[in-house]
Image (cartoon, rainbow, N blue to C red; front, side, top):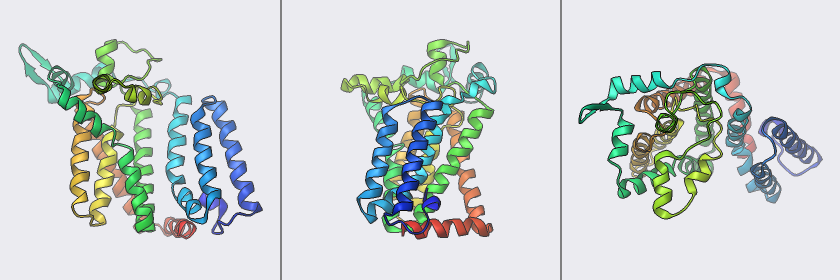
Length: 312
């Protein structure tokens, strides 16, 4: 978006034409691939309002168009289910988890998910739900902070975030994997049209008599995308850039949130320990690849300089 509009982000015939054209193209492509949804209008409404409101909001939304591109790609994955391209790991991943991290309980060996489900309490349910609610708001809030503090660090963080997601999406298609709750509800047989499930997070909704997590997981792009856990990747990226920007005590908060999300991913039966570890590795690899590209590629740095000039 930023490159398409160019360095001049004043409202003129060119910028209005480009934004209008992209908006219409997005609606048409979305209708073809995933059908019409009110979320699409909300996204376009936010973008267009901020783009036309003022110079500051225009720069802000152009900066955050990096995250908008990520969201659109994620949404379009619904049109291309990963189970159409490779077999889904169900029993194999479950058995690997039990073999590596199995817990002896009475006369049985349980996966950590199964063991923690038996040991759930209201207090842990509430804490786990609060931690899991941080997985998108914390990265976005951190991105907003960097946007106003240091535009270059904002770009580094945002592009690393998207790169890590792209790596995760590649694994989703190379190795489709069922989450732990799938076996709890459906056994080891593969059912391609399975809908998203709140699993252990349903206890949070029940405790507060709400449908918060139910509404979130009803919009999931793909049930069979448990490996790697991108929930577990995001806080790693946040903590890395928090440390890089020397944020002091706030990094302790980021660290606690990271550990809490990792724990909740397993506790709520949304991911195996193996998924969490894969998510951590994915985040580390994305950070390394981004740093390499930033230090080695002249063309990539030209792109960064151009983008920074647009949102400066």
